[in-house]
Figure 1 (spheres, rainbow, N blue to C red):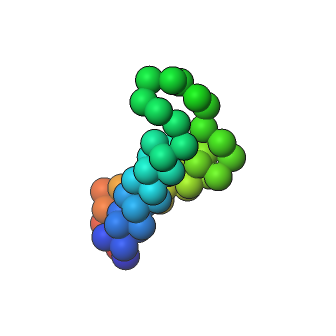
Figure 2: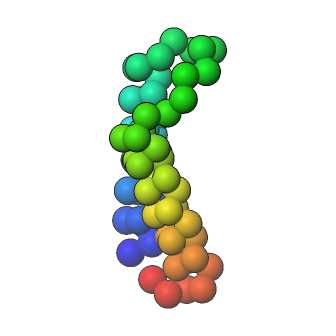
Length: 59
């Protein structure tokens, strides 16, 4: 279970970064839009959940 959450979380974070990099040229400092923020924070949430499950051996 933790490995699935880890894989899904990493996929969402990487997808968010890819979408952001496609939208802006590096170094411009354009803020993230709502879709990118949602993907990024949900990915971080899944990574955190996978970490908690792995640390406490719940998965």
